[in-house]
Length: 201
Image (cartoon, rainbow, N blue to C red):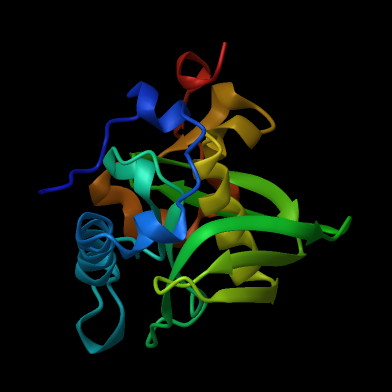
């Protein structure tokens, strides 16, 4: 199976993904999907000595972003570290607690490669999940990793980061050639795009 990133208007991105049973998780077909998701993240992580500052980093990916409606997310918990990777497979991740304190960060998405925007999310969270072998884990996260997990679990619930924009008519439009400039000028960016047509109706 060759998975591909879906376009932003694909209805699968708005699907609430199904939980996996341990039996499903053990199947070769499921493990092959996990390998393909990992391959994509590792291939586009853009970290370390070979980092290209004119391109964004892929630090998270959920299965439905590639057309698979199962609750699988790949996350790089070294999200704030440009030279390190700490990539994990999370099966059936669920937020079991989140702080009332919010933080605001600029987010993007591989399904909307030219769209960015400032989003408010909980500063700290606790997430219950399985690893790819079905072992239970409880993650307590704050800052960037917490934001990343909220973003990815949102995908599994059929949500996109643009749903949380304060003004969806003024999402940041960032062409590939402008990304390096955008990194330095996020707060004053004035190229906008109206993402209202992509929001749930």
